[in-house]
Amino acid sequence: MIPARFEYARASSLDEAISLLSSREDPKLLAGGHSLIPAMKLRVARPATLIDIGRLSDLSYVREDGDAVAIGALTRHHDVANSDALHELSPIASYAAGEIGDPMVRHMGTIGGSVAHGDPAGDMPTVLLALDATFVATGPTGSRQIAAKDFFTSLFETALQPNEVLTEIRVPKTAGRGWSYIKFNRRAQDWAIVGVAALNGSAPAIALTNMGLTPLRATAVETALAGGADAAAAAASAAEGTAPPDDAFASAEYRRELAKVLVRRAIEQSMS
Ligand code: FAD
Image: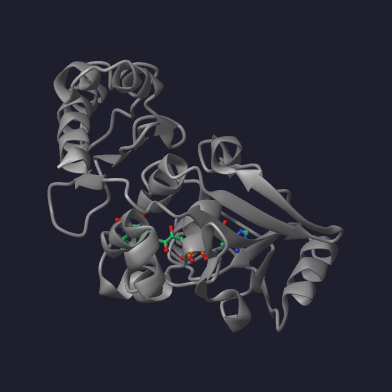
């Protein structure tokens, strides 16, 4: 389908993007366009103005920064997947970026777009939730940091304010922690029917893709692991507190059973 009529403005700086967000009617930021444009073609999204931030190259970087790795929001999935800093310091993040879609999607889509879109089927939101990442939002009065656990508020909804741009994702270094991201799909390059991110260590972290309105932490599994349960016993509570979708790809019941299997495998992989 053809999108509804819209105005287009290209921002040449972050300040200009923020100012356009405040001055234009019903605006939406355009980054890689790989979620927004399909939604506009389906007329699920009908913004009056598109503010193109896709060429703000100063928001495209991956660099070590203290005890974190800082990733600019405009960094393409391809560059996240191939970042030496992430391979060394937070490898689950670069691995998961390489699992997104196909090469075309990874060369256009951005990590910031993936996070801001708030799709519970997205791979990076789940991994960033497991990592306890921090998101930096910048608006007219400056920047603020939002913890991943407070960021994803509902289906396609986040804690970002309408006049804020997500500018940076801060990923803790995971040195020494075993990890796994398992994405289950029927065809290579499809979205996850269910996905599981696992990080071991003194406080094991398990997060789920496509098991509710937002990416979810599997807190019952984490509590069981912290209490000394083995992978199989802990994974038995993987579906607790979830509300998976029932759609053309899988029933909710199938997803609940699948989550238990994938959580067990992800825990085992993260410990091996
Ligand atoms: P856009 O589409 O430009 O924007 C998405 C939303 O985020 C919009 O509402 C926009 O206003 C907002 N936004 C963008 N950037 C910012 C910012 N910096 N600050 C505030 N708001 C912002 N994703 C997966 O996780 N796994 C997959 O397997 C997968 N497969 C795909 C397959 C296909 C064929 C396609 C088309 C997409 C797929 N995707 C998948 C989605 C892809 O990862 C998108 O790139 C991503 O979801 C959105 O990033 P974007 O840069 O394209 O954002």
